[in-house]
Length: 379
Image (cartoon, rainbow, N blue to C red; front, side, top):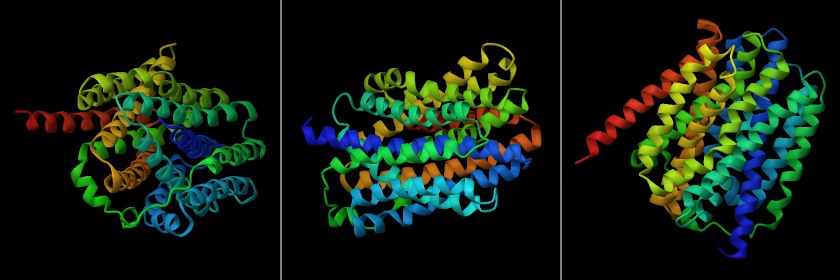
């Protein structure tokens, strides 16, 4: 791997930390503030869905931004604007003004995600592809986990978490200035056919959607779940950190499995573990098993995403890879939007335990569909 490729890969992962840290901080921070103000769970779910709507909408803006400003400038600009949006939250009225702010945040963080992750997948080549992507997923999760940890230290009563969050985002843009500014050729500038890619890779798209559902549901509602079950707000925020820790410490073994065994069956195994761990969380809440179950559920769900990226890089290149990343970005937005709505609705309708039970059911259905499809394809 040449020096410039390493620099580009490092910078791309740095940009992804901007994306993940901003979501990892803002999902629980804003949800806890709204819960403190007495806003109903279903209304919090609608508000939590706004950044994901922005991510979905960004599929139409990303190509135009990259063509006009270049990939590097678009990525740096999006990071800086995201930091400015985070600074605006505490100075605008709670709830209603947060709808347009969260939508705009989704648009700009999606630009970071689509461009940077395309770089990561492109430069993670060779026999170690899945393990490189697993390391990347671990870093992604670590930056997600930084948000809840920050909340547990600063609390939610002041503007301090917003100020620190914005400062981290500004600092994370520095490595991007060292990326070699490669021009996107005409072929890659063509409009992206997301629907066409979905037809080519339905399992990859479905797997990303499943990961996004549980990711957004737990980012937005796991702290609220903890509070409603009797934990303090600070400890409830750490429950989300426990979920994310699995993504950090257990992704490399998942990547090793994906480099040595059939990726679809590794993905299926992750689905089984995610569904099982989620279903056991309510029964284990008052015991020490609650914390490792959160970690295992987080690791297995993120493992599905790791293996999906590895299969994407293995099967597609060039224009199809760019199209695939746009499809994944859009799919993540759709899945996260559904996850926020499902989490809010299930908790409002069935109480706090509706959150883990609904996640277990969704993953069980995904697993059934995937295994049925693979069995039918087998000779």
